[in-house]
Length: 75
Image 1 (spheres, one colour):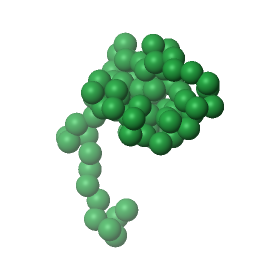
Image 2 (cartoon, rainbow, N blue to C red; image 1 turned 120 degrees about the horizontal axis):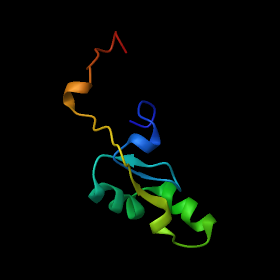
Image 3 (cartoon, helix red, strand yellow; image 1 turned 30 degrees about the vertical axis):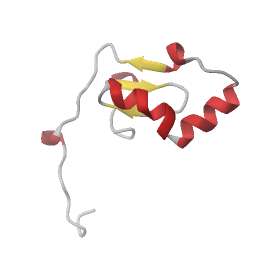
Image 4 (cartoon, one colour; image 1 turned 180 degrees about the vertical axis):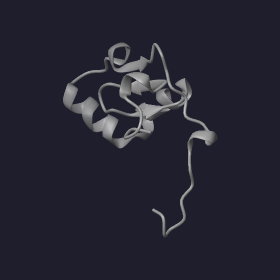
């Protein structure tokens, strides 16, 4: 999703580490699970979640109908 949908159009995203996802629960859990976020947070010297964690005003939701599965030969 990161390479195909602009950050401000992904439903939920983190401006600190560029994590992008489709739901708020995943965004929240990435704080503990995503190593890049943890490194960036340590360098930032604080926790500014209200600034970093964002919800898009006009999101684009990507579903199964938006994905074309390719064979090994095609990819």
